[in-house]
Length: 98
Image (cartoon, rainbow, N blue to C red; front, side, top):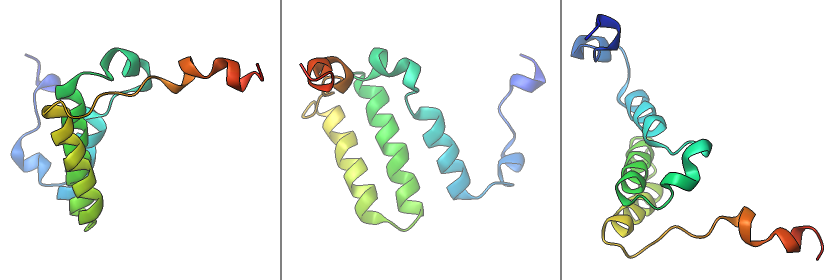
């Protein structure tokens, strides 16, 4: 493995605040628009995404927002929520006036 692809040493990570690290994790775990259709129903990915967002809100001292994200993460894991249909596919006739 080349040096450029290795994980940074813990000492290098200390240069960043906890909030910056959490934000970077959230960005890394967020589903990109190009992957949305393929991953929107992946429970592990969605739970990870919501948990990382909850951590960011918690570190920003917004516990109510963090709780909402944690509840969504639990919903993905316990299968009590599912991905809604893509809005761009079901409403084409409505948007065009048909």
